[in-house]
Image 1: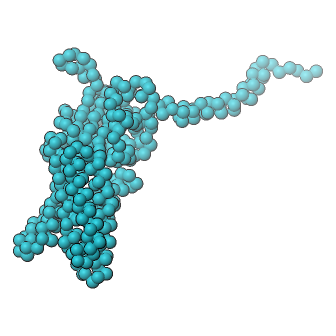
Image 2 (image 1 turned 30 degrees about the horizontal axis):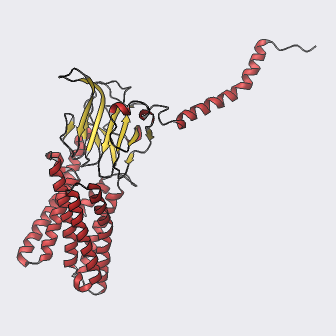
Length: 398
């Protein structure tokens, strides 16, 4: 007579049969937590090693878009907005042009006595950059407790904790609860394509020495070219040199603004920053168009292209006017249109002039090709290819 299995054997049998099914269910549950909701699993804090100088923060943040730009910190920390943060897995931050504000949250674990750490937002001339740290401060006048806020940007004066630098640079606190989030709010009319880097003080000093040395050489060469052509202008009394000097000077001033070197040494009022930005940019496009027309003698060699270049001059004047009147979104659109249209127009005009045996067009083509390479690399940097010294400095060299 066959014996019946005892309870232990039966239990073992049931466990053996059910175990694979349970494993599958647990795996499905974990996958659902990962994919079902953006905040289902919180990001682990990024632990900073004192022996390391640089951390790319882009792949350690979660992002929330604020289309109206009026959400407060209390709102983004509470449901439903706190559940709408989406994990960002790319080291590069490419948010493009937008009227919206963007909230980025992340967590850091900074060991005690590890020195000073700083957060660099790798895009100069941003309008609003606000970092809310986990550190709790008490208002001296009201006694109310609040999160520490560090503000910088072209829209207003910087607060304590913002460091003078060519890009927004914020000093991170040394004592805080690492389980709580940092919240970074960004808003600007410029394209939000940038890197987010956490630097040690030692690493930042080394990077700054190289960066400022490279730009010092570039700006020194540009200023030398300006003074040399200024002398030629007075000697030969040729208006081509005048247009070239005007172009080089306006581009130099605009590059100081665009690369953030003015902000690194002096804080400008928002109105002053806007004035210098749009006047220098408008003057660079106007003088570039005038130089093309004069150097290639387009009125004689290519009358049709001469009319097209005249249209770009009108666009440059409109861009400057709309920017000064506060319509910066329209001004940026006109600037982008000029960036895409004037260089090809200049190249095509030079080719037509060269076909007509106008030899100065060959020199123009050579110089314009270098500028196009620099402009292309700068535009691709941080969007399609990572930002590097090649993408940062080539445009200034061109």
